[in-house]
Image 1 (cartoon, rainbow, N blue to C red):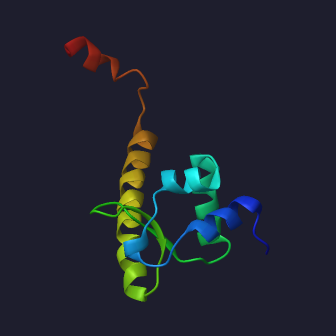
Image 2: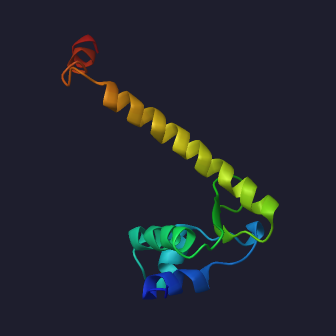
Length: 110
């Protein structure tokens, strides 16, 4: 499968290794692609083209990078796993809502 123009632009911008992480905003500026398209390209590169792109969400150098080692890949997956757990918790809560107006009592009580 071939890369589209956005995927190619993002892939050529990404660097290998955690110390070289690049934020989504930086990638958007460098490539002149919207942040939404950058995110979609990163998603496609990871899921359709098996590029080991992970993200660092804490520390001095935040952003996306291409994992160079299995250890970097596994460490880079931890924030993603945490995000999935949080989103699943939200999904479970929303699915369980029966009374769509119940929250209004919170407004009445202040």
